[in-house]
Image (cartoon, rainbow, N blue to C red; front, side, top):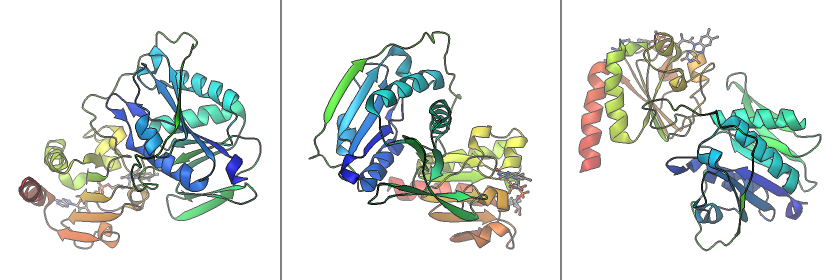
Length: 326
Ligand SMILES: Cc1cc2nc3c(=O)[nH]c(=O)nc-3n(C[C@H](O)[C@H](O)[C@H](O)COP(=O)(O)OP(=O)(O)OC[C@H]3O[C@@H](n4cnc5c(N)ncnc54)[C@H](O)[C@@H]3O)c2cc1C
């Protein structure tokens, strides 16, 4: 069965190029069905989309669907394009990242097709009989749900970023590229406004510097931004910080915010409420800075610093800068 399986991986990209989460999807697809056919589907605004890295990361074929509206993600244009390609290719599985756009697109397409959608998966298995089983966290990360997907195909699956990293590119891999100019319904009035100053999406960041109410006020988030800049990290926040208007909602981590799995999560002035832990406890290494030695965040932290975050964060920035520049 494995050799016959066809998997579409939807390429996520922005002005700065292909997002690294796409390579994770290709890695997951290759691991799921090494002898199957993996098609990277690239909705591109212009002809010069670069397909070679997609092939080096595991795609057998790159389909570049070109239309001027694809210079940025707009839900309606992507939905129309993906439905079209699914109709042509008839894949068994479609993989997307559990990013904002991946969640929106997968839900829309699954609803339109009336097929299964498994979201935020952290493991995928394919049996010899061709059955697909997924694993995903439920109840705010306190338990895992394992499900066998059924019903008509394709199965739509979104994968949690930072979980399926592979070995990197294999530049000896070869693949095929298909370029086609496509037509879409007229969406001329649709234009996406990007959040000003949003540098790095927190769900994709490998390092996150996160602040809670213990940062005392919005002006002190500058300390976190300085540390983030030195580390190449994204800045995140707890819910009350967002409720107070100190940070945008897109930075909120937790049960009612976003789920992140970075290599390093530095929690500054955060108590470690269960609703916050739900969004970050799968981080590979957690460092907590809190003035209260009994704060719950220390129970999940790999390293803890008891003290005033307003004093400790600038010291960390200074020290990391010295080490990294040295
Ligand atoms: C249904 C529901 C959903 C929720 N969803 C979310 C969610 O998605 N995300 C989320 O984050 N929360 C969520 N919450 C809120 C959650 O319960 C907590 O209230 C929140 O996480 C606490 O945020 P905090 O740690 O920033 O603030 P606090 O709990 O007030 O903690 C501040 C911490 O800072 C420490 N501190 C104070 N001053 C300093 C200093 N100078 N230096 C170092 N440390 C200092 C204190 O010791 C304290 O531990 C939700 C709640 C509910 C009921």
